[in-house]
Length: 243
Image 1 (cartoon, rainbow, N blue to C red):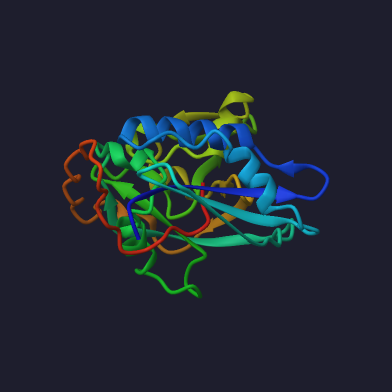
Image 2 (tube, helix red, strand yellow):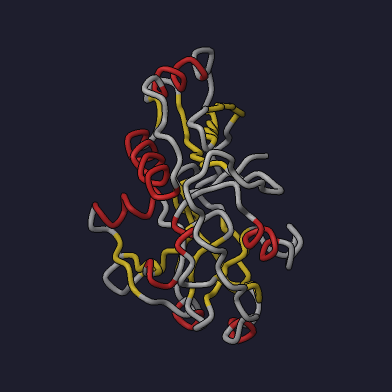
């Protein structure tokens, strides 16, 4: 598929889209940064049409091409039980902290897919990536949140290299979370969560020795900045539901 921007949202009967304005603002900012055309003026109308027949919660996926063409798909969404706990492991695949493309949600998922492939679904529900300095960055489809003694949440700093998710931004804006540099040691023996705008916060448990990932594999060099052009490069796979 063409190199695309992606937003994954949650829609519920009666309340509509969750954090719609934030998702559309991020889409617009990423379009500016990466040289895409802006979303069409009727994008909200297209979203409304896509959920017209919705009677149960939906996962709504918006994909926008370099030329600003939008494709919207919906699938049924089933929230997790409140007592769900995800098994989380740390990958050897490293996230380059200086790659600006990581700040945008796109169809380029090779790094995340490599990390996810290190463990089977039975071994891990989510896989975390570290950067070249051994700092915690993010999960393959989630951001990370560690509970502090005052019950606030600490989430990895953008300088570590990560996609700043919509849920993460909301929690910081509400004063419930603050960003700081985190290492695997900060997760050990602590209550922590992974989460995204679609699923919210999910309690997590770190499996395996965190020390395994203190010296991650060398991060691949970041791709060259993508110049504005009329024909976009190709990507191999689509993104999963995420931030």
